[in-house]
Amino acid sequence: MAVKLTKMQKKMNYDAKLSKLLDHYTQILVVGADNVGSNQLQNIRHGLRGDSIVLMGKNTMMKRTIRLHAEKTGNKDVLNLVPLLVGNVGLVFTKGDLKEVSDVVAKYKVAAPARVGLIAPIDVVVPPGSTGLDPSQTSFFQVLNIPTKINKGTVEIITPVELIQKGEKVGSSEAALLTKLGRKPFSYGLIVQYVYENGSVFSPEVLYLTEDDLVEKFAVGLSQVAAFSLAVSYPSLAAAPHMIVNGYKNVLSMAVATEYSFKHAEKAKEYLKDPSKFEAAAAPVSVGASSSGAPAAVEKEQKEEPEESSEGEVGLMGLFD
Image 1 (cartoon, rainbow, N blue to C red):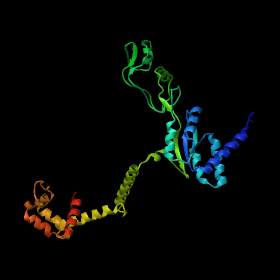
Image 2 (cartoon, rainbow, N blue to C red):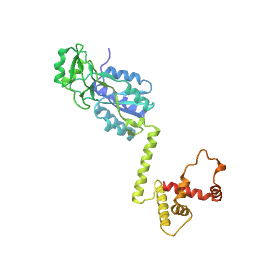
Image 3 (cartoon, rainbow, N blue to C red):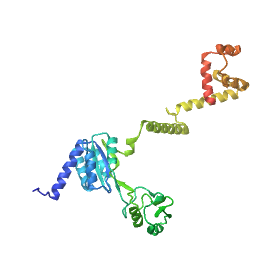
């Protein structure tokens, strides 16, 4: 006959188990466990068996053990878990890949009917079509203001009906209708709310960021730094290219407006005096034109033009664009 443990002994065993897990694991998923049954939880434990352990318990007991463990070991990082233990939550200790473990946890969901008083986790929309109910049930649909018609001896819903909105409580009429239709609109399972890794706590969405997402976020941050630096006239690595280009534009504008000139400004002044040169330079070369048919004057000008002038023209054209 098994010896029945006292309440104090159960607490001591739980404290020892949680403390041991905190010593051996640096990765923890804080999961919500609303409406999760014991059989479903057992299946989740079986699916995670190998490198992950699911531990449930009262929040007060978990908080107490974590605080005592932090005092005993000096590991203050675990105290970051205490504010996260709110509501019906549990802890998944793992040494595997956090994204893969999170996917396994999310896989074990069970369809559930809409019971009266539950908070709807999603919008529930009843699609149009035959309900399979006999015409005597028409009055039931009229109470819920659902347009119907009789088709081939059954009640048929005419248009889609938004029966329940996310965050609302399920009423008795809505629950009765979904039961009659044989629908189980909700699904429940462990939901990853926070990720703890080596003292850091972050949202589970971080696990699904790709390299493209990181590059995009870095580019947005870089543009904001550059814009701020330009607004306050503070030189920074992000704003330096823009400042140099803007300064060059100012000098070029002054040279064009006055008699002052420098090497790269000469090209701009030539284009302003004779715009046809710009049109000729910008015109696309005909595919059928051969090199032998090119005007000799153009070839001569290209040969006589120094190499550095091409760099100035490219820079200038970039500025005009």
